[in-house]
Length: 149
Image (cartoon, rainbow, N blue to C red; front, top):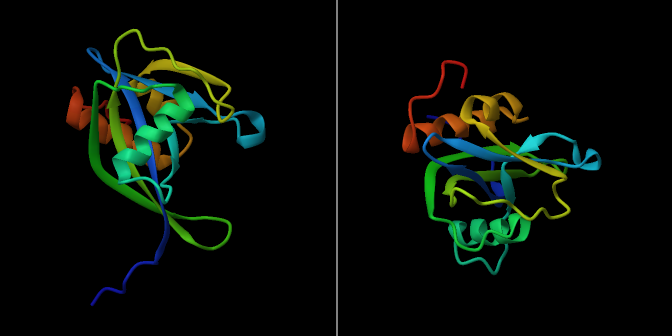
């Protein structure tokens, strides 16, 4: 018998914005005070959010100004992680297709953005689970990922 996993105290979402063909991802850099690393859009599910996708759409609007993505595709993938308080949070990943000419309006959560290939995104994204989600996105919307994704 397998022991149950930790109780999840908070649900979160992350969105991997992309355009195709070819598949390119829009990644965002946190300011130095928030780590200075590259990430997808992410945030917590709030009590007023109807579901995970509603939380994602709210975060997209808040962090990029994106009101109407072309398509939102659940990647049917999540990861749990501990936070400083000792609680466990769970992050749900989504692929978010945008119009070819989309340029984000940055919030104070990011200080830069870049359109990059999937391989470059996998190289720049800070967290291992982010790199794994890029591979999952490519399985769903694009060509097979390179061996290092």
